[in-house]
Length: 147
Image (cartoon, rainbow, N blue to C red; front, side):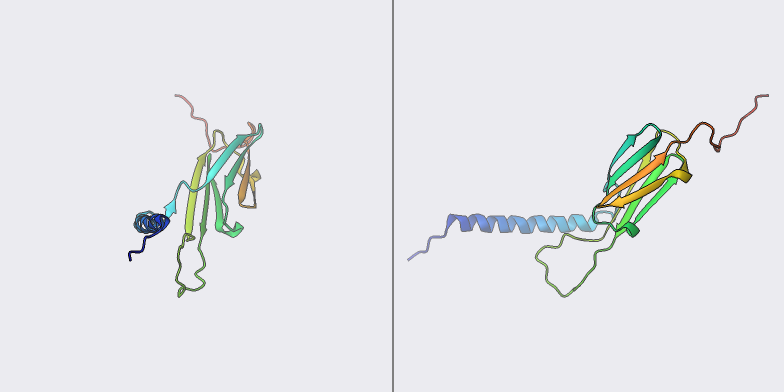
């Protein structure tokens, strides 16, 4: 007597084969991609009259893993984290958490006062306050006399 298979079993087998193919493609992609992701930080930049406020989503990073730098009118945000490998002998069915590095540079529309800049990080959200430079502040420019 021939045993009839459940049609849902056939679908399940099909999805399992497709899943394995996609995992193989994903593994190839992951091995070939650069380790420095330049688009991994979503930001909002607000003009608040006397300052710019940059809000960036950086979930999963510790405060110590985040670097901020300001060079002229360019603010650079970057973060790097290593995922702990608790037990390398474990056999994973799926492993998507991995080490990650992200970076984002933002060109501000005006000069800012570097000394008054400050930032906070809470619940995966980085907020950077960049007070605008006032007219009376010293800048790096110099006057060129005409002959």
